[in-house]
Image 1 (cartoon, rainbow over the protein chains, first blue to last red):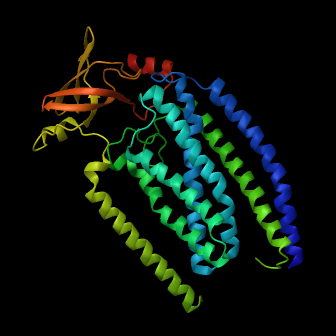
Image 2: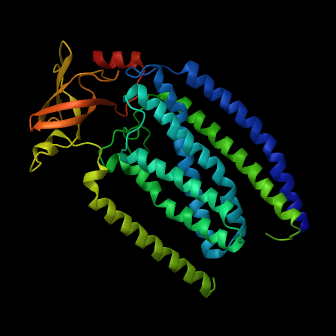
Image 3: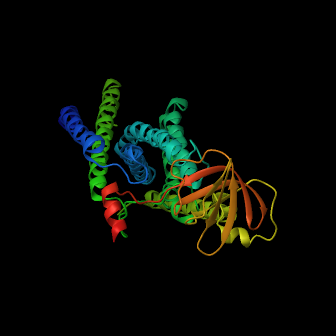
Length: 233
Length: 139
């Protein structure tokens, strides 16, 4: 048992360095593509480049929340403590990316739409996601009892999960100021390939960043448990 | 197999999620009028009575309909079924163009005449480099 835990420790710590270097390389490549190589848009000009930060952040924040919610379902059903620790460690980077998506969206909205903020379905539901992240993180500070906080945070994640499809399909269900999605699996993608490449690379870079923050946070959690002298989670 | 407690917890979770989804669905369905950001010209024509409150009208700016006289801009918002004349004085966003999406916020004077107080540009999901757009236009 001890051997496995030490092994897990060194694995988490070593992989951090690899992920960090990989992240830096992919980020540089992505920024070079997004800021220099990719063309401007015929209508929006250079302001289209905000997309290369805005869209990946939104994707990652939605993805992380979905992952957290799935893990939380497992936690509630099977009382799995490792999944719980993983979900907890994922939350900070998801929260940051949801904030980044909102802020860059606002910065992008001013020159294109002519407003910083609109209470349309997409933007409002994204704000709700951000608040769910905040509630999840705050619950950790508020509740001391470990069993209680496990349940509360898991329910917050599961409750917020219902919001995810609302965010995704809000632009199709209702009339919104936000444009419909451009990258589609089942229908035609409406972004030109030269713009799709930097978008893909930036998404990979942000995913690696999330992984890095996750590993650091997970490592901290493991150390906390070790310091408490508990031989199991 | 899993013990009884696990099965019960799974069932409990499933039922609570199903209830929640149903509740949220019904709430959103009931509030649909308020969730939409703007109304199309057709939806405005179908209104039973015109309100004097601020509303938002959205659609396409009709081709060759923008007319600028001194401090006023007049144009037509269309959804290719119905049209509404819009008048506005002020600065329009850069992306405000003929044949592109627009959302106007203001007061409906009657079903054919809208006095806008704020103009927002609504752009579509297409992202194309200028050279590619030019070659597409030539076709």
